[in-house]
Length: 340
Image 1: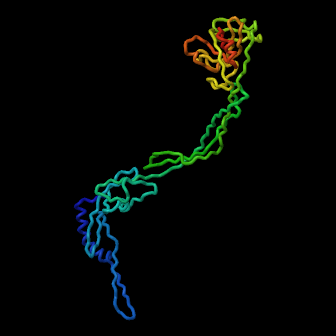
Image 2 (image 1 turned 90 degrees about the horizontal axis):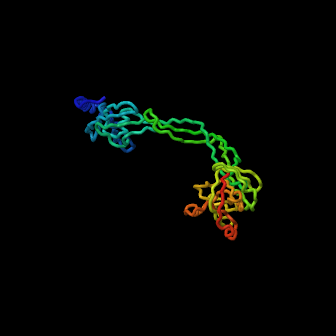
Image 3 (image 1 turned 135 degrees about the vertical axis):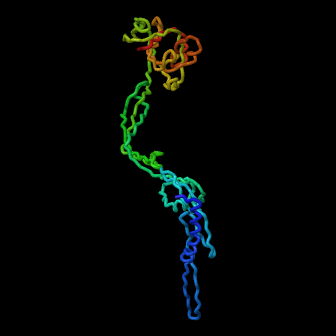
């Protein structure tokens, strides 16, 4: 309860008179001890001074050489947890002493908005936050990863699942910080894997198809088409379907063995350079001259070149293993059948 100044004065005056009796009888208790020896009968008196006295209104009585001094207390407002502020009359000491005087105990995790060693001030507001922690354990799934590995046993564009992925489990400990009865923060403090996940392994083909250049075959140019799609008989007499045919001049190029194309494939017979905006990479093709006198055969779009964007009108660049083969081919009109 907060004391008014009038009540403080009344208590202070009464306390002065009471203090003399209290301090003389208690604070300045005298214990006489007689010290005797064989050659002397003198007596030595020792005086013991007790602690300062704190009055109900927070005032402190202090003795100094037999004089009584009164240090006025202060009024502070203290809020504990979610409760409302409450006024207390406390000694002019530290914040910690003020809390002790108000009989407010701090938990090991509690916090105070003022330094405990700082001196209290009149009408100061002190807030004590009650802090606790709650732990919960949950079992959660551990997702498996997909790992891709290159395989020479598969052709480019082919994939194969070697190991199926399996989901694992883990126990996760969450710690929730609770301030004044409300959860303010949740974080992971411990994780223990109880069952390891098994990664999914996918094989990705790197083997390319080495197509040989096909010699002229009279049956290879027998076609039957309807609009953009149709069928064609290849050099082996097999009927194949195509979804589009692109006609135009073609050139030839060569590169050292092991050279890499635009899609990361190594150069080879049957791999051709295209305009990827016209013929997407990876498209399966069959190429020959319009009259069937020249057959390049089956091919795959795996590279590109400057011709695709310089407006020269070339529709593809056929790969050969030597410069002489490229010179022999020169520039010819071809039909590029995009296979269905």
